[in-house]
Length: 147
Image (cartoon, rainbow, N blue to C red; front, side, top):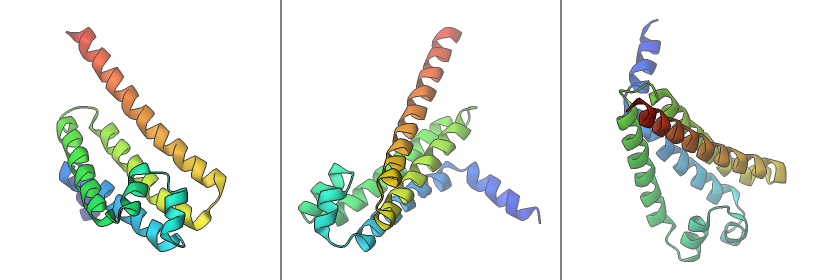
């Protein structure tokens, strides 16, 4: 039964595999949004993302979805590929997974429609940004002091 841990290890150490996760999460997020929202008027009124509201208002959601999926994959792959040989790779993977989780939970917010749930999604989003800034700052200052 060693094959399952080996499979997870191969997925974990392959940036291309991990980079697929946020793309899938975005598709799940917006699929849930359109499935659970009663109509596009609700999306225009309550959706947190101004880009999604703009895309819905201008009937360009399909184009936006393709663009955001490609962007998320490219950004995640680039960051993880750069970090792959460093000790920070695991933090990059954790950050990618946190962003993915935030998207899926954001799509589910249309099911729960409570303020505390929506606010917790916002907190997760800010936490993702804070972690990214802290890691960048730590890496930058460590590099400056070691030179």
